[in-house]
Length: 107
Image 1 (cartoon, rainbow, N blue to C red):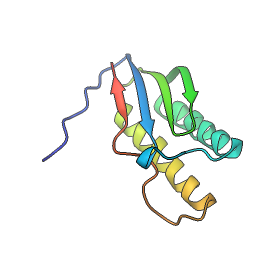
Image 2: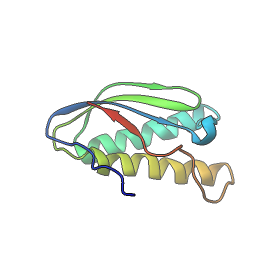
Image 3: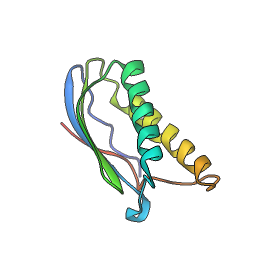
């Protein structure tokens, strides 16, 4: 069964969450947190997002993002994908899931 299409439109404001696989930690230390924030900054610049707030917890994160260009899915794919690669490489996991399923986005 296919997933439902994400609702995206210009200037939408989203509360986004994404949790670690099996509710495990996605940040092991401050170096991981800084790497995530750097990637988030790159995504914000690339996709012209406005970040109103963020909160990094040990096993998940919250973002409040405004998307002037209706491109949430593309940016989230890059954010979670690149951070997963960086984290797996840094911690010697090789490959595999870091996040549990899709991110949640509430308008």
